[in-house]
Length: 77
Image (spheres, rainbow, N blue to C red):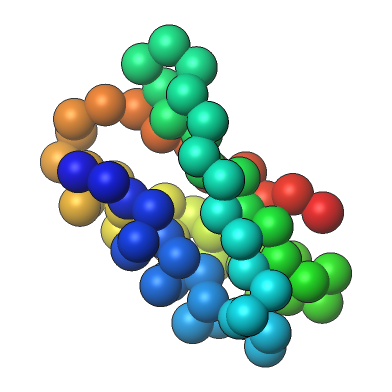
């Protein structure tokens, strides 16, 4: 399952400037890395207090993936 679309939906939902959000997909072996680019003010919104928001997004995506393949989320400033 491609997680790019649900990831983009979840990330843009918490951003003040959703039009600026960009998600790049990289592959390292069997692992998929999703790089999330957003406005500087929105980076804090995406990460959340003590990383709670990004951890919640990760949890939702892992439930969609159902254990098939590995992935990693990176918020890039």
